[in-house]
Length: 74
Image 1 (cartoon, rainbow, N blue to C red):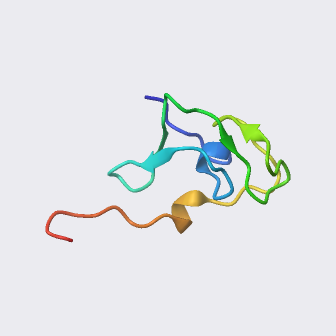
Image 2 (tube, rainbow, N blue to C red; image 1 turned 45 degrees about the vertical axis):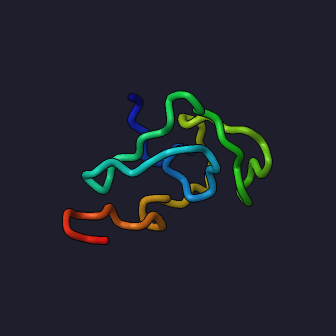
């Protein structure tokens, strides 16, 4: 599985691709079967972008993502 790099589309709040936050809470894992996603309200709005693409308006998705659940939480 490919790990997303910081300041790239797969770690951006504006990227509409499929990804998940790894259990460590900081690693972003794009879905290897669906590596492209649309830019949403960014400079490439509406165009499909790959997880390694980048732009000057990157916003950290991990800060906006819900924290990973821990054992015992519902």
